[in-house]
Amino acid sequence: MRFAPSPTGGLHIGGFRTLLFNYLFAKKNNGTLILRIEDTDSLRFVAGAEAYIEEVSQWSGVIFDESPQKEGAYAPYRQSERKEKGIYQAYIKKLLDSGVAYYAFDTSEELADQRKIMPNFQYGIHTRDALKNSLSMLPTEVETRIARGDKFVIRFKMPADETILLHDALRGPISFQTNQLDDKVLIKNDGMPTYHFAVVVDDYEMDISHVFRGEEWLPSAPLHVLLWKELFGSDYMPQWIHLPLILKTDGKGKLSKRDAQKQGFPIYPIDWIDPNTQEFTKGFKETGFLPEAFINFLALLGWTPPHQKEILPLNTMIDNFSIAHIHKTSAKFDFEKAKWFNHEWMKKKCVDDAQLFTEVVYLYCTNRAKKQADTYNQDHFEMFFKPSIIISLVGNCYVLDDFLKYYQLFYPVNSPISYSNVEFTKLLQQLSTISYKVLTEIYDSLSGQQNFDDSQFLEDAINKLLLSHQIKHKDIFPFLRFSLIGQLHGLNIFWIVKILGKEESCNRIKNALGSIKKIV
RNA sequence: GCCCGGUUCGUCUAUCGGCUAGGACAUCUCCCUUUCACGGAGGAAAGACGGGUUCGACUCCCGUACCGGGUACCA
Image 1 (tube, protein in one colour):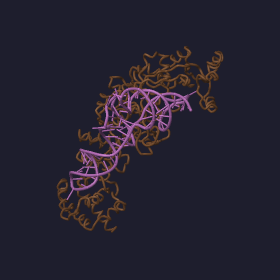
Image 2: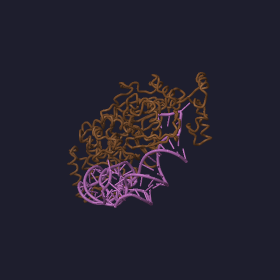
Image 3: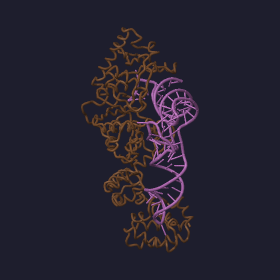
Image 4: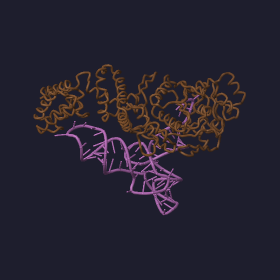
């Protein structure tokens, strides 16, 4: 098996899912997974793209058996290096000798002009005789042109009147008419192979048995089949599996970077900054996803495990993986569902080992906070990120970032709560005089409280107070919660009080009471 | 335009000719909690359309519509 990205930027989740399926299938069948870098396009090459893939692989736990960093029997793994080694030369010569490939001297500009004149222009069976190539020219002219250093490409001569039958392990038989197909370039004028030629050669050289790739390759698959037949015979040809694409959330079309940015969800596994444009693309890791959740939801966006269970660890997915349960249809990406996966995974990890999970949360949040330098306070962090607190919060959190948000409610950098808030003034209108009186009593009660660590004790005290005034919790708690953390929703009052401690709780209530007076 | 692929609740999907069409996310209702949530229970919600084949079709075949992809010296 192999995963063969081209290093032209970060890896988006569609590409990552292809990698994941390759990995799952390879592991399931005790195969070897190779990372091959398809850097045949020097113009679009982006530095750091390869390192990014290694980084993603490490974070997600989807690891390669062989890669440029981990060389094995099939090295080298970059097509540029393979070209230098001359791997493609022998094979192109074979095609040239047998007459299924030919030289073409037309420049890109000339062909672009052709396309302007003829909208449906194809370089192929109907047009090749009228163009500048070794099929239309005399052998001597070809020789002189090459000898004098004219730039040329090598094209595949698409045979006439043939039907190519392709067997896709997912989709079954698919047929193509060669007359509809064009003469694709195999070797570019800089001597580099194109994708079409390099995949076939390298998949053969690397003993690839199964190719999982995106559906966008389906239209060029017949070319690859033909090349396989010419070069190596169909017996060695790998199984093709063309995976459906991942579509954008609401509208139509492929999921794109812009689409994701507009709606504020990530589309790359981890943060990526384009070295040329400085353009930033957000990652799932930095958004606060656990790698387990990330691979889990991506695997299920394109594959259904048996038993209708959805929360699955990697090894279970490997055990259950099979081509038969891969989908044929493109799916729309749903960020809400992705968050649900993460929610479930956080709860699961917290139950399994609260101490360990707390460390994960702590590490994530400190890293995040240190980036926003002014929010980081080591003492506060250590007070807050304790298993007892994390356990009570995890049910309310969907991404790791939510823990940091809660932390910031308790340890705000500046004065925490804005009492000019619209919600607060709305709240005030509902506040009766009796409630106000009760609030002051709660304040008195809390400030006189000795045993603040015992939340049950606090609860009883406050309940008693409310009961004596015949006041319901919902009449007073929203206000109390807002006084404490500046939010109407989110957390159990008694947790809040306990976490804040006596002094801070009382101060905040006092402030709130003060502002009421001012406003009223 | 031409070529290739696809079409089941709002979304992700199950069904490999027998379906009262199942599950999950989201949504709504109720319960739990004298507060926010979590959690639990329940409800609403689907086979693009038209023809065949068949005792029987969501499932097979054909056509139409729609969606996606390809049509580069990019992958």
